[in-house]
Image (cartoon, rainbow, N blue to C red):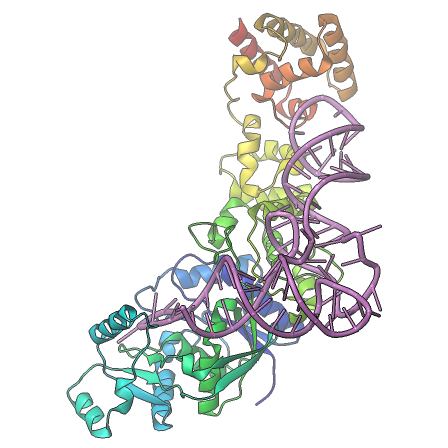
Length: 480
RNA sequence: GGCGCGUUCGUCUAGAGGCCUAGGACAUCUCCCUUUCAAGGAGAAGAUCAGGGGUUCGAAUCCCCUACGCGCUACCA
């Protein structure tokens, strides 16, 4: 068996592609590729009750979007296919049977009702809920009778009463559990499908996974997995448990308290490279302390030694800041292209090309574009008389200012230049006894409909003289 | 409850015994630039390194205890 580096992510197709999946994919892929290895996607769809048809496709699409495409996986292929667990049932059945033969597994015929009753009693006695191993002591004859009667059963693993199970975690060091605190877990469900603990071990072994890099929540069940490897006589992979992404209240990141769907981030216009950069900053840092870097840097520099042990709070504000930085790094042409999926089909592309440079510094998400630049396209936004009036002014002074500004603009020789326009406006302001800033603001509101806008002159240039005058006229009419 | 994993500015983190009167980033505030908002630049404020005991000449860094947080404790993953 070659000691090739092979890492995998094993998401369950139970809903929208999760940000935690991307988080794990990032480090798994970076480590694998940083060590000349392979990155695998395996779909863990053994829970038929939570299965979601679209999910597998969306997981793949999201990974592609982020540039975290697997080397092997469903729809991609590979030497260890199939990569979907429901297509690998035979393997799990065989493993379960082998475990029984080895004396470390047994069939359990207890009904859900009995288990519930058992747990109720235990709860009443304030004991932890655990299986009482009743079926462990079933005789061969009893088992065969039950089987002959067609009684449904699950396969459980028998955990020894004595001893401790220890494993080394690449991030946290040695971790050990006393075996007696472990429950005899179900490995094969009555529908014949395996539970995570069985499937993950069987598949990781079959797929020759060298490093199991997964979330912290799996630490508690790792001893189970280690035992299974040992019982089967298989080589135990290396383990690394990444910290769990958290909500602001420090609970495990959840849909209720955060946007966990990768689709959402894509729709909002977060750039995949910003997403990657941000996720890498969660629980990991560059040796040189840089905070802006790309995926290839992560591949080159990633080590488990630099992974934090405490769970980072997922901070959308910081992601937004990083996203803005990445947007500003884009050339105007690149930004124009990247904006395409985020705008209405009918949007005037000629105007858009001119708008991109003036909005770039103000854009934090691609999805904001139209909201921020709507006044350049189609109808001007409705003017509000109150907005047109300067703080210390009256509607009358605003009206006067607009009329004089209109006359000035109309008389300004074409083509307009920034210098001439500005000089003229300032002269006009002092003539009117207004602060220059107030005059500019009145015009800004008349032209853009808002007191917050891209640079006024550049905006007017994009709109053109005719349109600017039209808008000023509208504002005048409003105040008259 | 049991077991496990954690605990450095509001948040992400640097820090692997002396370089720490704890550094950076985001957020906040101030100033500069400036026709608004941004962006950019310069500053400020912000952490008794969870608390308490050790070890040591010396501890954020090593050990122990406590507290708190989180995770697991399903025929979910």
